[in-house]
Amino acid sequence: MSLPLVTTAERRHRLGRRHRLAPSARAATVTETADSVVALHATDAATVFLSARARLAAGGPEVIERALYEEVGLVRLLSMRNTLFAVSAELAPHVDASTARAIAVKERRSLLKHLDEDGQGLDAAWLARAETATLDALDVHGPSTGSQLSAAVPALRQKITISRGKKYETEQGIATRVIRVLAADGRIRRDRPRGSWTSSQYRWVHTDPWPAVPAADARTEIARRWLHAYGPATEADLKWWTGWTLTDVRKALAAVGPDQVRLEDGSTALVGPGDTGPEPAPEPWAALLPALDPSGMGWADRGFHLDPAHRSALFDYAGNIGPTVWWNGEIVGGWAQRSEGEIVWRLLGSPGPAAEQAITTEAARLAAWVGEARVTPRFRTPLERELVA
Image 1 (cartoon, rainbow, N blue to C red):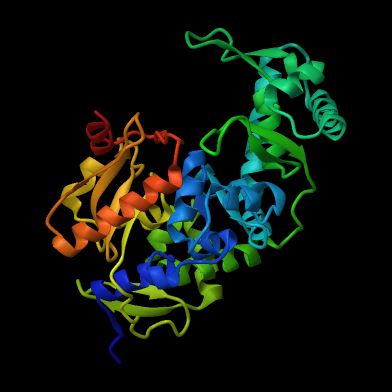
Image 2 (cartoon, rainbow, N blue to C red):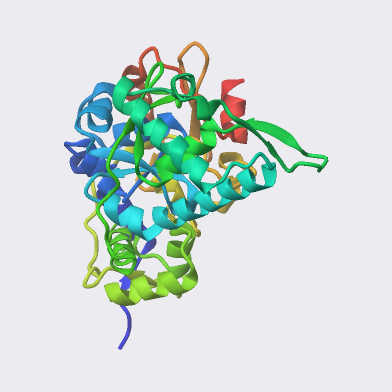
């Protein structure tokens, strides 16, 4: 029995609809935008806002701020690939159990190792007291920055020596590491930053850890949602996206029970159970997506939406994608914001006059949305640097 064929065009149709990028598919709420792609990259503070903006039917930065800091329907977690993501509060317990718990264990183990090697007698008991004092300070003072916590908690002003006796020996403050461990454990979360929505200097608030979910069940739920958003895809794609072991990936996929489909190049890929039918073509759409947007980072193999010849212009040396211009499910160029606020873009190819007109309109919409804010990606790519210059 032959496998159902999913063409490249249909994969792009799926991307437009399921990633909420086609105009008629855009979401009403911020949490819907995150769920549509499972998680929004949050290493760069602006990415969460610009990724959500591209998928929202209406609303400015204040709508996203409300979801993050007032409704807390969207939360940031150190999770897949040891990277900061923003996920819906509904999905957060599954992300925590499937990925973040293991990261938290490693973070704590690493900090205790540094404390032991420092030789000042700082140990697990000392760390527990420092954590309790930090949480108490948050209860007393409310949302606080790292520097404010250090002022309130003497233990956080402690300094330790990393790699003592080696040529790269360095002295570091302990505050950032203690805060990182508390955040990884889910006992504190990032609140409003100092400054605008583009800032990563967060305040912290005391919170309760996420409800416990069996790790295997959590991985199954993540894999199921990921297949819906990113399928057709392969187990290699899911392994890359999650950072899980191959064994965990295969167990999660087996629990989901995906269907196989055939791609135009003759290879096979996976989709969710029963998700083999053709995807209706959405209306033509253009999008200007930010650096690290999930639609550009969702697969290890991005050949169906990116000409390999353009990769060097749009990615940095570590494989982080920069700001991209999309037309009907394909990356056709890149964009940047200059210091005076102008949004500039360049096509890498010739998608045609209809595409250029739609991209011009979308660039104007982005400029109006960003307003007086200035966006500089944390990871600079060759094309973005050229456009800014």
